[in-house]
Length: 220
Image (tube, rainbow, N blue to C red; front, side, top):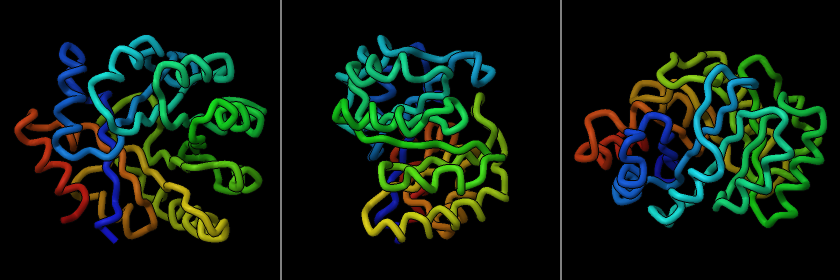
């Protein structure tokens, strides 16, 4: 199965002083997606980047821009990120009482739609939108900061959501974000994940190590 595993380096762990060059380097190194963590200091306790930065970075890679919106309210900003060059827009089920409508809006803009669940949020919360989503993101840490330890109970949630996806009979990415490293990656894959978000584990060692790091995360 490892041959089908996609690696989505989180640019949260990149060198922000050279962000364009960092994205170009991970693209060359074999990244599948470019994972962009957007935080607002409200829904999560950190502030990162907005749509103008995404637009500025778009020219540095032809890979899929996988934009994870950890913001609330989310609806007013979806179109801005779509216009900035996002290919996948993932919102949090906890960030809006109307996430069905938000997913509809993402799809109406011609983008792939993702839904994310925080560690304490049960899979049943997204049962009735599974027909709409292209990606489900399981947070295996509490969102807001990089470098946290993987929450082991996330593995059961990944397995449950993998079964939910199989019932749909179509391709839906199952992505895991948080504490992914050389030790936890295989456990997430074994539980059913096919997309691994890795920040520190991708960027450690500098550009000369990126290809090696990505290959190790894939397990081959």
